Image (cartoon, rainbow, N blue to C red; front, top):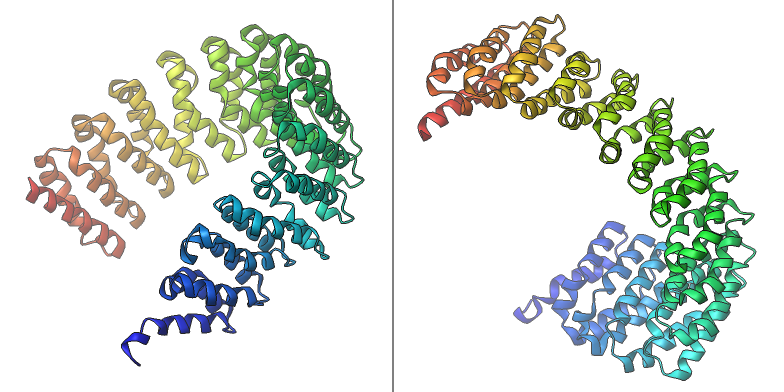
Length: 587
């Protein structure tokens, strides 16, 4: 083969791979399309590779998806934006396939290419493509067309704009629900590119048709358009056209539509202003909070804090708080969980007095909920309430429940409490902590669940950092060392872990006098797992202890472990001995 042909040889191979029976080989070749294009050059890519891809009738959706994705970033390989239109043909073909994800990716790539094309090229190539797809016999082409109007419309001349608006209106009344769904989904993006005058005359009638569709799947997508259109319209137009639709939707016969309203409602409040919110949207939201479908109540409960933030505190206390009380004892655990995940955020909104009088009893009932996720949600957000009512009141009202939860039967609840303890300790102060929570921290070291024991060891380290080594020497170290003779080796491992975490906080002197002798004793344990963990702990202590201690105490202990019958013990002991040698050489 001549030298001139050599660069083309791999290209021939890759094009052959595009026809290979093995799907993985075809995918590999598609992922290398940019390499093929660079080797072919811009002109040959336009004249040979792109037509080849247009004619490629691969029946594997995975391959078609990869082609649609690659073509979206292909403009540099066909000669820049002047030649971008050549990429439209293969993507137009992909817009007609049955698989939704392929069509969506083809539309995404077309939008990306169209947004870079020149105005004249858009009108010459892109707009006719949109019109062809919108007039297609098969519903898939019309579904794809709906996502392209936002690119075709802005640069089109006035006559074409009128035609495009007319075509979109027809798509919104298409016989196929899938097409109407696509039109409803893309209405907000299309509306954002349209002049304000056309919004009222052309888009609002289209929107009103979609809101009265007999398919709930179309109506619920129209709900999303409410928020998007609301932001584009003047407040008075929003009140006149969008507000009545939302109020009707909040009473729609389909729970899916009401669910979407519950998710979108607070965004509309910003668009319509305070007075219509108070008069119309608050009653609609209260209806959703009391809906007979649990899914709707879940969505509404999850937005309760966001909704309260845009209301006056008096309105929230008068209208929303009674519903919150009802939801806190809802028959569905998922509703209570959704409420618990956001209710703590209401404290800063309502203020100190309302939180103490109204919210605290709700917090207490949720803290005692039978469903662990509900309890977890409350525990993890306690700091938000603390900022409003202060630690004294928090400790009086909620601490008994927290202590109760520290022994909860669900280990994840216990874990959440442990992770909250250092923050609680810093807020309560050392005296209060010793009285109420000190014994709990020690109990957790002997929990049946490993994650709890491990978190308890880390918790002791964080408490020692918070209250200082002297406090730890008095309240933590003696109790930890007392547990070292526990008959179960897993608990002895936990104590070893706690010692290794405490050592850097306690400092060299206490580690030498109190902690190191215990570790050396454990090196003679009968369980190999304990012994190799001793080797690991000793290795971690090398940097914080004096060289004389390392040589006189740690090295002899490790030398003994290096001759242990167990292979793992020998391995970790030798690793630690190498660390000592390394430190000695560097010093």
